[in-house]
Image (tube, rainbow, N blue to C red; front, side, top):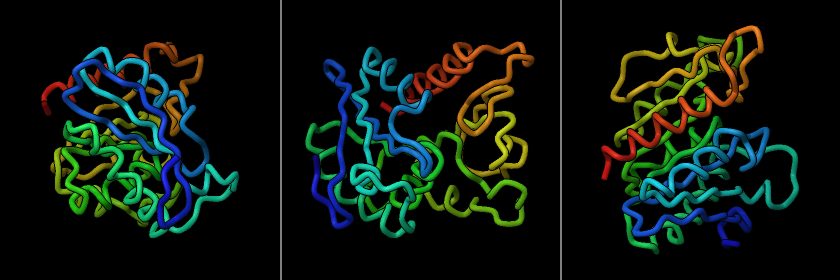
Length: 205
């Protein structure tokens, strides 16, 4: 448990031996750290020298059902950061959906080594004019976006050109679920996600 200006957050560690990076991942506004992509990354990355820290925002720890305003989410993330840096290796900020937005908004101020944006909500469903691309553009550090091919919050082809790498998870929705008729299994989707993250973090340090 970690005290922050937004309340108590919780960090769950998946530790690598002789870690060269720490990857901190926040959850989305509609779920917790048990999301399939977060769990798969936490299981896979320690074998590749990356310690994973899954961060539960204070609102989630407190049992609330609705996420607070972005400013409060950012305050919670800021409060956890000193703990994440204690281990010594550079820290990559990341998360899924709303957690990815937090990572982008705070990366420069916190000195993050990079940003991992999973299912970045480029816009509300059906509202492409409400683009949040500026948050990605403002990250200011090496950034990897992993996006479902059928994500209603922004399909890969909707993303503008920018200083980030984008990897598509074919047929996947916002939660990286894939329809049975697609011919792609959940295991294949998770392998696409973890493979991209392993490769990208390997190039960082």
